[in-house]
Length: 255
Figure 1 (cartoon, rainbow, N blue to C red):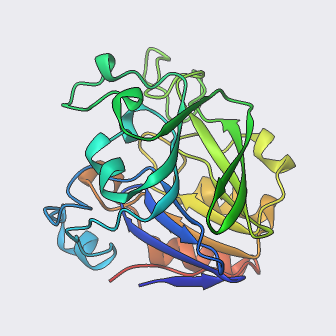
Figure 2 (tube, rainbow, N blue to C red):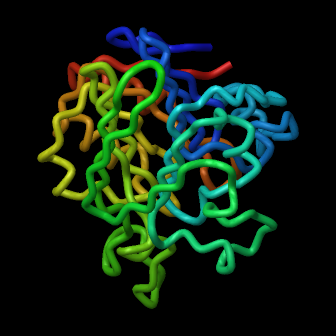
């Protein structure tokens, strides 16, 4: 389904794939693809996950003015091509390297779009037929001694290998932290729509995300990036209850 917020139409397709459209028709996607969520091949890791996740769809909209990719785990060149319009701008973190990805992907620069590389603290303006969108990045990573570090203090998401995105679309700010711990630095952001990563395991869990939501005090929280795979399973209903008890509006985009 499509969630309406402050004039924006927002839809979660599964995993980290989110589509955002402004009233004037500017379309942005975050981290499109992987695990069959855009090819119609996704299967639920459990019965509970099947009900608390969008249904898979064979998707070829190719309507994006902007596509943002946070890090290599979320880079799917096929997914990008399924959503990107002919004149799309592809914004990709500078550390994403096709040669280091253990999947069959096309390097970003070989795709037929304008490719913009960003670091952990960047700002770009992307223009499309529906207007301009400001794109800011923030550092997204696991702390070596944090709650999602391995016993040897190594982490799945080291600093410098990915980012989160803060988009300003038609005056409304949307924050997608990517695969990250819930860092104190996020508190400086002014966020209207918080796309909360609640999966845990390799990044913030629902408890961390609820605490972060309370700190950010957004106008609306929409959880994403959960239940696509077994190690991403999360109790979205419990998260919604927790956030609502803190006085913050929340919506679930599930089947």
